[in-house]
Image (cartoon, rainbow, N blue to C red; front, top):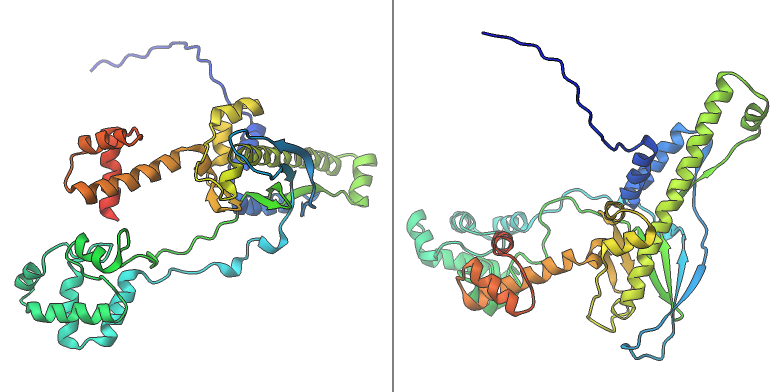
Length: 381
């Protein structure tokens, strides 16, 4: 066995982000609730900082004109960093897991069915999908379990009469006849997971024919008391060195948060400019934004805009929506999945290639592989 040692040199050029840039990007990517937790941690570690609830401020009026949209209304956009006291995160609202559709159905069955009927219910439940529909025919369930079909049907009737309409439907046709198209026995029930409460990062309000764009998160303020001022002005040694370092950190965080706030307000402003009619429920047409255009206007790279949009929500006159909804991908995905489900109901068993072609004819271009992915998600649901 030969063991050789070689010494070689390699020149490698890499671009590394400084710690400050990494922290700026981190603050930008955090959503409102995550940011609130992070800021309290920062304040605990820096004696010169305190949480600041920013006051309402109107800046920069912008008139919107749209030749294609005829209206007597005049639209203005105001940008604000208002802190909404009434809408702050309330930790008392955190709730544990809610009972799922299956759990509620089982509890109800236990209460109204006798022992023999509950055994039949268990056999039916074992062959039920997530929507509350049967995956096998009742005749096969009866044969496999040794339970009479009449007993199985009696259990189904009792559950439906008790409020679980359409439960244990044999197929979609039966379910739609009972509930209507697009509604399942499990619709409206929780999935058993903890409820996730959200706090919007951007607020768009419409008041007196004016749009107000608000970045709804708290900030940081530098507060230097008299003792610290004296050390900074006249002191020396470790205390003065420590405070100088903390003052530099404090200035950095204040500037980083202001940059984050203005980035979010700019995105909100662009959403209003392109979609004011949609936001007021006067049009169903949504004009999506492109991250590369926002990045160009802000003078940053696309990945920075992506971080600003990630996991954030926006409150609008139309409701609370994920911020990514206005950047196209989510909307296209939802529309494609809705059409795929319609095609499967109308046409029955189609190949992925056939569905892709049908979508193309309806104005949505989706690759066969993507169709297969969406199809599996629909079938699981």
